[in-house]
Length: 303
Image 1 (cartoon, rainbow, N blue to C red):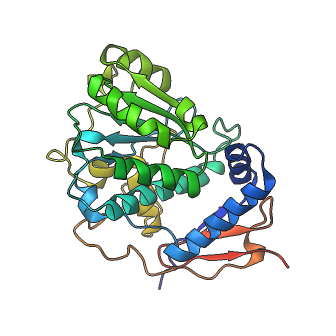
Image 2 (cartoon, rainbow, N blue to C red):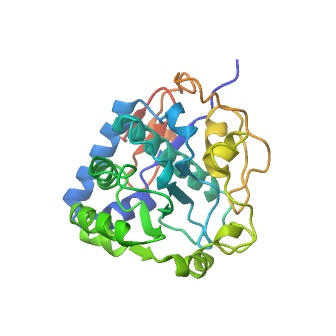
């Protein structure tokens, strides 16, 4: 039988650098976050499969990188379903974080001069057509907690598109829940400023035409065909790799080869497990690593 692909996430300079920045260079707190992350990975038993119900909504979309090599996670707020349990949204958010982590790890071997040394991502929140029913405080609290506890300083910048009075009110209510450093990362973008703002971050040939670029519009849930149309090329390639497809991606995050399909109607784990890890597999700055698989997690450190 073929061995399932293994993702090793080293606790190296990039991760430790993010943790030190997130804690204002407080070494004991950073150490605590490392232990928290290892415990988290052990608890969830590896990489996390997305919730099939949410994949069909198109609310989360991970299509390509920006000009600085950061994967862009688009959140299309109008398709956030308020009837979906918050735990399912949490599961899907974690799955997209795993897709970002895997994508950036796979890029390491092909980049001679990386521009995204801390391996962070950009989040773009499209508020067009969204209302109070789509984004509630429980959702905001969950995302803030996940980001602070398990993915500290992985998020480098947030663009909120189409800001109006409703969005401004939502932000005033949510901002006290957010760390001051994170608040500084948020940019509220008015409708008239969307094309210029996005073009500063995204190559014109990738940016969809409805935002002033030359790229294809993102499919709506009704228009979506294959997995890439539903979740974005980076996510499709990452999950395809974990499924055993080994799909490669180009510099813009687009797949070089078609990934195997994902059965979004099934809630079963995407793969059964991975082999155990040993300290000799990876060094890293702290001599520790977390081996991520879809079935098992093993963390180790040298004696």
